[in-house]
Amino acid sequence: MFELRAIEKRFDAVVALNGAHLQVEPGEIRALLGSNGSGKSTMIKVLAGLVNPNKGQVLIDGNPVTIQNGQDSRKLGIATAFQDLSLIPTMSVRDNILLGNEPRNKLGMVDKKAADELIDSLLKRFKIDCDPNAYVQTLMPSVQTMLEVAKAVSLKPRLLLLDEVTASLHYDEIEVLFSVMRELKEEGVAMLYVTHRMNEVFQICDTTTIMRSGETVTEGKMSDFTLDDIVYYMTGQRPETDAKGAGEHVEKADGEVLLDVQGMTVFPKVRNLSMRAYKGEIVGIGGLQGQGQSEFIRALLGAETVEDGTIIYDGKEAKFKSPAAAVVNGMGFISGERNREAMFPLRTIEENIIAGKVAKGNLFAFMTNKSNHAFANDAVEKYSIKIGELGHPANSLSGGNQQKLVVARWIAMQPKLLLLDDPTKGVDIHSRQEIHRILRKCADEGMTVIISSSESEELLAVSDRIYVFYEGAVSAVLSGANKTPEALVAAMMGMTE
Image (cartoon, rainbow, N blue to C red):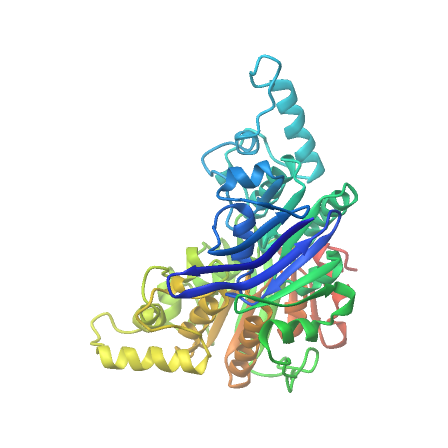
């Protein structure tokens, strides 16, 4: 049995863990849940040897152990797969998996035959279709994530730590991962599973530990908890019931068309794709990974070249040559890749919020410090972003508050069309619900929203209509009584009449 007991960790004045505890048994899959900033990632890092606690004990089979670094963790039979990948992009798949774990022969040399067998068996087990000699940086993000997990499993751990590994995976890949996890469970491996996707928790986990503000607030069997219970323990508040729930949104299909796309082709992902979005409507875009969703959204924004077809936006044909031109014409864009596409991590919170205002405004417009401060402060208050001070760097915020920061930036600009590409990836359920409420309020006030998401539950909850992409084209349009989980999954797999 692995146990963390009365763990405390402080980063200067910030209390990350305050007497937190958890335990996980062999052959058990335990969910570690909590809002962004609750301390769950710090708990994982304590076991992984990346963070040394100020107080508390780590015990294995009842015996205290010391984990000061990653090597100590590995020697104790602990392996970790992180959301922020530990793979080296400029090395091959083979070298990444074997690094530090090379099979040796009797002479102490690398056993090439055994190494090849290990690589082949891992790729087959995780159904990863790639060249073992390919550089990791050339692979799709989801494939990289599967390799991250495969590398951890190759260490044959007693305890496997999975930190948000499904954030970049889609339906079919998650099923493969869960199949492997069930096999490991039968082999007696203990697993600690961190995720913000609540449907996964009920599907794969036996037990749960829930954290809030650095403390363990409850734990028990998964079957003893409902979704409302989990939200309550994570936030301290019972979930609010939206006046307009899933399936109760007002249909806008007889309203005014804001966007009309006909026969769009974006090489090589999108082919002859057509769709419409009406004013005041939330349009969802679903599909398995790599079906053209991101390319479609970026083509609307002017970041991808449209090979064929027409885009009628706000009554005129749109041929934006850059995202800047689209922003000037009333578009906004929110990406789920916060650090890469949406946020300036080292810039201040205030600078991040006013960035959209600067992008949309006149190049030579004069902006006072007072007006900028008031604009940023208003956005923070309006969207309940938990910050220290406006002058703190954006990366000082939790993941959920970072994403609300990006949402606030663009909604404060009141765009006619707001484009979102998997905006709640890695965001806790409470922040996700807040973002959904913000989007619904914006739509009710006349804004058109197009949201692509890797999560079926999110699309069903927030969308008026859902366009499902399959191999770069629309396989189905779901609305009203047809907007069901079964219909969505069938369309994602191309199983439509």
